[in-house]
Length: 378
Ligand SMILES: *[C@@H]1O[C@H](CO)[C@@H](O)[C@H](O)[C@H]1NC(C)=O
Image 1 (cartoon, protein in one colour):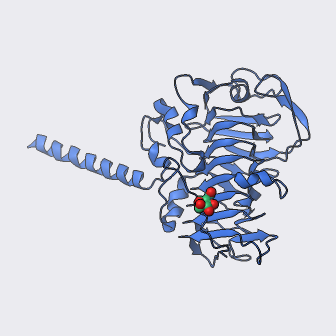
Image 2 (tube, helix red, strand yellow):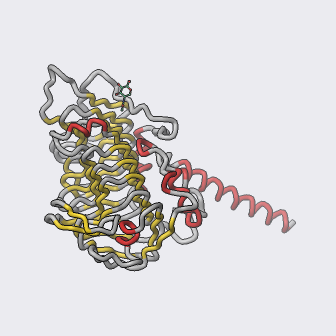
Image 3 (tube, protein in one colour):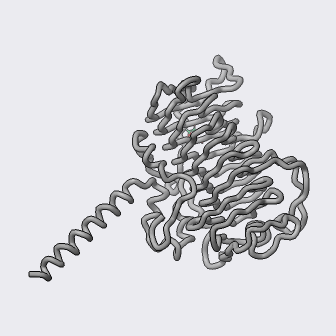
């Protein structure tokens, strides 16, 4: 009798556990579903590289037997002579494939912008990592970079200077405006689950012919100029730029550029917008934008219109601003232009499942740097 009671009890607990886990998995987006249900993710950190979707494609060039595992143990920063154990040493000085993790909770104050080299993965999962100071992260002429699970904020501007580069030589750097992350002629880059806020200029700039970029699961807040895709109105090479902006959370207190696009193409899908002041999505120089199944909550007062166009000549060249399956709240509206549908034409490995816009609010509730408890899923 008692053993059958035990059996029923165990079975019920197992069922409850199974159902809870099933609903946890069901609430995850295409990227998170790939690794977050795995309770052994800490021992299989590099598996993350197989989870990216969108224009970055899979980040499998970053992993393999030849990948150096590097742990940041020292929060200090010496830009001209980076010390082993610091983030700058791992991200700049180690060439080839490196997978960077952090020993414990730390706050890193950069003394100069941090140049991240190719085939570098920075993985902040499981610890609280704050990066502030001058810069901040600069991806200059690099490919195959993963930035995951960092809080980057209060990044300040800096005049022209020189900083240690990947080749161990001091590299001249021009004026830095004070962005959390800045891409300059970078390709195959995945920026996932970071919390970015309160920087001097913008939070994320993709410039000078950068392409093959996925910006996913990030939380952008408290910023005037949030995200710039495309260098300036004269930089025609950005017409080849392709960026996926997916599963992100914008707001509160974001004013404009979520994103602002020049020349290139942006697939903006399944993002949650908690208001804006001037606009959410816009651009200049004939960009193509597909806005798909986003959740737009217009601000209480002011502009309800999502889009903004600078210098459009409606008669000659109608830009492709296309909205499909978006959900509009609080009077939000989206002015479409152009006849084409601006399809992303993803390859099979870039393709992912887009969810109904109405579930985006709950889906994006875990955007930004995740809190991962010990011995459990993130
Ligand atoms: C996808 O293909 C169509 C048709 O060829 C083309 O017009 C469009 O520009 C392509 N989209 C991208 C992002 O390249």
